[in-house]
Image 1 (cartoon, helix red, strand yellow):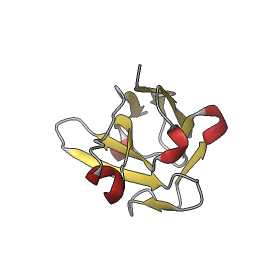
Image 2 (cartoon, helix red, strand yellow):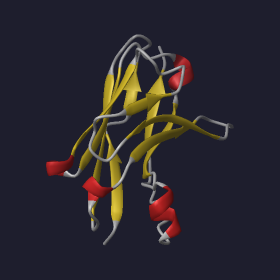
Image 3 (cartoon, one colour):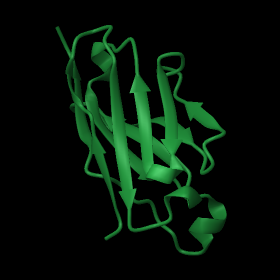
Image 4 (spheres, one colour):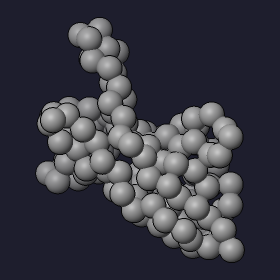
Length: 123
């Protein structure tokens, strides 16, 4: 079965750290760029970070720069998001997803999303 499964969410105090994981199965993980997207309560989805298929290039939303680090281990079919200096506004459900590039989209590939993991930053 083709799927992405996030884990690692939970309750953390402001200033704390948390690492999210996303395990892929059923497809060639190393062939796809990946991203993390979050959705806070009562808000729409917000892109957080992106990493290319090989793991050598990453991008971050301004609010995440300097605090979050996206990495991947293709041998383990796993994507990670290390979050430091967490703030209450980081509270959201975090989703990992494939981020197909244009040639892949042209060939018919669509985004694959996980079920999400909840991160709550509160005292």
